[in-house]
Structure formats: structure tokens, C-alpha cells
Image 1: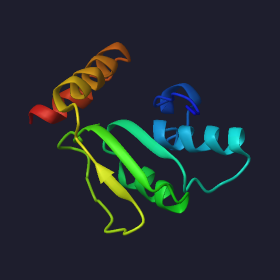
Image 2: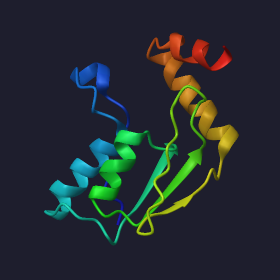
Image 3: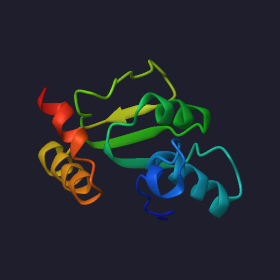
Image 4: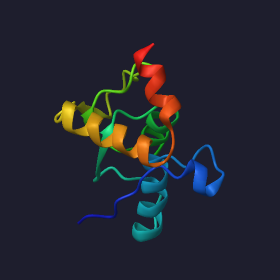
Length: 117
């Protein structure tokens, strides 16, 4: 069962925690009426940031599949958690391209400039 598709909404919601993974966990909680998701898999365009990764661990998500590795300006800290399997990147070029286009469309050119420096 697909619970939903979410994307980052920090700017629209004026909420620095409104990352796609956090919003997906919130939606899953509402749909399933629980806060632990030991029977779910989260698919994400980029590897989750440390905040989102910790939320996934708190929610007992057993598996995360990322399309691409994070951009170099994102501090990637993968917890050595035996209860979460981490797969990916499975479509690195395609997913990085999707994210870059989203940044362009939302006026976040500054983020792409950080990748080049």
C-alpha cells in the first residue's frame, strides 16, 4: 500500500522541519493511526539529512531506499543502526537531476552554487 508522496515544503509552511521524509512520516501516522512503522519502506530522492534519519529511526522504519547520494553540502551521517537497512543510491543521476530541477523551479539557485564550490 502506498501511503503517499511528499516533497519538501519548508518555504511554503515556514517550517524548517517540513522535509519530505518528516511529512511522509506524519502522513503515515495519520493514515495508519500509529507512530511506529516497522512494516514500511521509505523511498526518497536523496539520502535523508541527519534530522530526517533520526526521525526514521524513532519511527522504527526498517528500510530506506535513496535514489541519489546527498549533495556535498549536506552533512551525511549514517547511523550505524542495526534496525534500519539503507539501500542506494539506485538512480543517482536521474534523482540528482530531479532535485536540481526542483531547486531551479523553487528559486533555490544558491543551493546549486554551493555544490560547485
